[in-house]
Length: 85
Image (cartoon, rainbow, N blue to C red):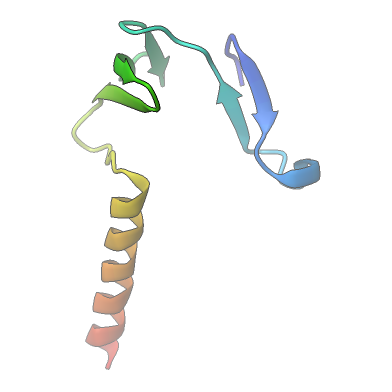
């Protein structure tokens, strides 16, 4: 993993060494580029504890808020089980 910033393990005691969290500090208007620049994450606005973030990514990359991601996966799982029943 090559990046400028502080990479911290996201698992206690680094049990799964393949996953790290890169922790960066950015100002409004600054970006983080992922995958050779194919994914751009830009800080648009910050109001107290709410940050507005913009994403530019290829169409085949899904970008979801966590609660939407969880809901989609639950719906897929329920649909799969309904198809089996």
